[in-house]
Image (cartoon, rainbow, N blue to C red; front, side, top):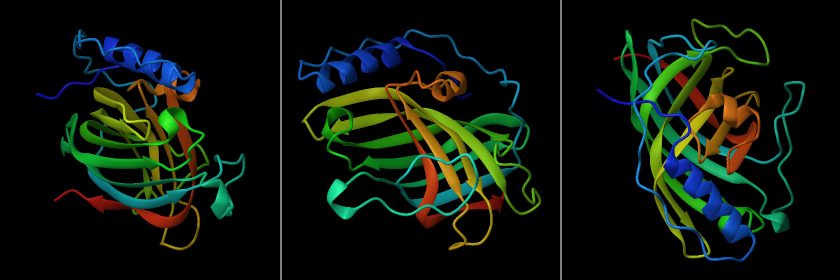
Length: 216
């Protein structure tokens, strides 16, 4: 059976490593994982009977009101790109499967920017914080797991927890309403939302699409 984790020694060590890299110090070594599985749902989570796929780009942080967002200027390189596919292993079980690729292009970000490859171990449904969607066709999922960070500074960090706190399908591609929030260094949605993760980024897609699918 898969496992869900929240704050771990790995996450704490990664946080130290990211802060150290941002301050031009040598990164601290990662500690071995030492955590018990946590299989309960958070209050805002429900069992899911759908899967999500997605890919695209985000630039500016999610605004208070859902509306299309412009891209940042090309010379800033302040954007992230991603691709994922994620699902629960079955409708009655929150343990998940899938993959996530995330690239932070901003050279001013931690580690000078980085790429992340993660494997999904948890998948549930959550409500869209922008309001109701056509849940029969659209909606939001939350998924988490572990992965590898490769920094542009040459550093590499294994077994790093992550969470897509929400990934939301708001309709057809090109409408400019799909949105996503990612935290790396924690798999706890509360820590992610409080800004306690070593890395967090969210936004309304400026390119690409997130799609909800029936389980097959």
